[in-house]
Structure formats: C-alpha cells, structure tokens
Length: 460
Image 1 (cartoon, rainbow, N blue to C red):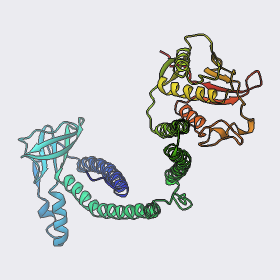
Image 2: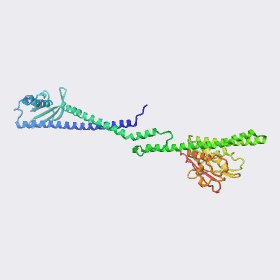
Image 3: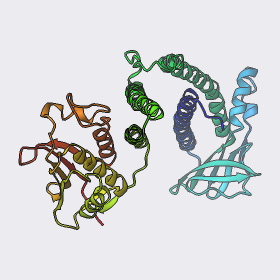
Image 4: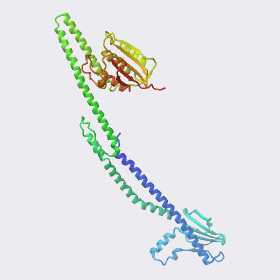
C-alpha cells in the first residue's frame, strides 16, 4: 500500500477543513439572508393590507355601497412604457388581493381566487391554489366587518433564493480556488526546509554520523531532528565501541594463539618424556586461557541483544546456587568461602543472567584472593535488596574503580593472568538488569567489596 506524503496529507486535511469552513460560513450567511428576505416580504404583505384598509376608509365604503369589482392591472398600466409594463406585470403575477365586506367578496385582483374559496383566517397562512403555494396575510376589521387579503406567490421568493445561490456560487468557487492554491504553495514552502534536510541525510555516506544542522529547521521539526542527532550520537558510540571491541579482541586472541603455536612446536620437538609432559601441560594451560578469553568475548557480545524477562527471585537461593556452581574454582588455594544473610529476600531480576553476574564476580574474587584468603557473600536488605561480595585480595585503588569496568582494562603491575573482561561483563549484565553495581573497601580495609543493589520485588 502506497503511503501518502506528509505534504499531501497536510494539504488534504487543511483543504477539507478550509472548504468546509468557507461553505459553512456561506450557508450561515445565505440562511440568514433568506430569513431576512422572508421577514421583509411578510412585512410587505402587512403593509399592502394596511394600504388597502386606508383606501377603504378614505372612500368611506360599506358593504351596501360597494359592488363586486375585478381589478385588471394590465389595463391600468397600458399607457406606461413597455419596459415598465413588463416589470410591473412580472411583479403583479406574484401578488394578489381580495376584499371582503360583510362576508361578501367585493373586490379582487384578476389573478386572485373567486369567492369559491372562503376568506382566509386572520394573520399569516400558507395555501395551495391549483397546486401553487401562496403566502396569505389577512387583516380583519370586525367593527366594519371587513377582511383584506394580500397574497404572494412563493415562487418569487424561491426565484430570489436561487438567484442568491447562483450569484454567490461564482465568487465562492473563486475564493476556494485561491485559498487552495495559496494553501498548497504555503505547505510546499513550509516543508522545503525539511525536504532539504532529508536530502542532505539521504546523500550522506554510510559512515557519516555527524549531527544535522537544525539552525534553519522549522521549530515544529526541531524535536524530530534533535532525536535523529541523538540517535546518530548513540550509533557513533556503538560503532566506535564495536570497532574497539574487534580490535581489542584481535589483540587479546593474538597472544594466546601465538603462545599455543610455540608450545605446540616445543611439544613436537621434545626429545624425552619429561620435556613432552612439560610442553603438553603448558599447551593445555594455554588452551584453557584461550578458551576462557573466547568464552568471555562471546558472552560479552551476546548480552548486547539478549532478552531478559524479569520476575521475583529469592536472592539467598540465587547466591546459594551460584556459590555451589562456582565452588570448585578456588581448588588448591584453600580459600574460605562463606554465605551470610537470611533467606527469602525477594528482588526483581532474571535468575539466569543474575547467576552469571554473581559467577563472574566470584570468579574474579577467587582469582585475585591469595592462598588461605577468604571470600564472603552476604544477602542484605537496605534501601533495596542486595548482595555484597567481599574478598581479601589486593583490592582496587579508588581512582581506578571506574576504569576497571572498561573492556580489556587491567591494573598496571597486575600479576594474576586475565583478559580484563570480567568486570566489563559484570557491568554490562548489571545494566541490562537495572542492577546498581559499585566497588568499595571491605570493613577490614583489606581486599575489595562488590555491591549489587537489585530492583524492588514486583508487588502482587
């Protein structure tokens, strides 16, 4: 389905509203004018009836003195110019009168009904004569037993209404046409800046993520292009991070792969069983380190798009399970491992990702804690539910605690082998699960404390 352009949508919408408004106003004006015409014509009927009454009073006529007469207007205007005759007769065709005295029709115009149709009731009324609608006004004078009827053929009013409508149609159509043309040009000019901005974006190369100049963009479109600029900024950071990730991953993998190649060559050149065993052992250790680096790199890349549905999780059970899974890591170092806190402390998280997060931190703690050291895991409830991991290792200087969360960052002088990915993975999982992670000194002042603050549990 083809989508309408913004220009066309705006034009159709505003044009429809404009046409509706113009015609609505015109209908209101014509309706008001028609009402005024009706009132004016009704007033004219009243005036004509009063003129007839004045004429009768002047003549001093009564029912006994007046004989029935039929007024032929054509004979009365025969001496006038032809043009005036036509105008008067055209007007007279839509007018008629009758005069009743003592319930007897004594006078009428030639186009008025005979006495076969009785006198009309007092006031205004509408009647049909030979299927022709007439408006009748009857003025009664009970004192003299007089009734004056003045009739108007409504076709005259209808003709005037049609003339008004036809007369207004031309200017109205012209006005609407001018408005629509002006509207189209206004929309086209108003959207030209956006069109130029879109063309500028469309003409960019795939690696051009520089911000759009919004100085000339219409105010209504500033939020749209500002959002695009923010998106470009995020994409730029993401692409830069991915490039750094690929470069660093290549660097980190190059060393263990080189070592593996050298160790395999040493194993191949071994001349006795002892040299072969030493080379094989070193080769196995190199393979394990390379595998660990690859696994961590894959884990770090996977968390960028991994879906993480959350639910209420018991942190004590989570910590207990994580310790059980990772308890074999410190074998041979005689490290004391303890779990403290009360059970049934709920928090909102994803149990699988949270278990990986705790496992990464435990692995880090076991790796840097010296022999006969200690690692303690505490489940606590403060402002929010949390897990605290204390170790008795060398710790991390306060000014380096933000840097260690960056990928491949390692403290200068570190002697424990590693890739610098453990805390970066932990940070990424924590951000994914909205867990606040922080580093501090344990109460003893020796080692490192990792604090994990989880979101509050979802209420039922």
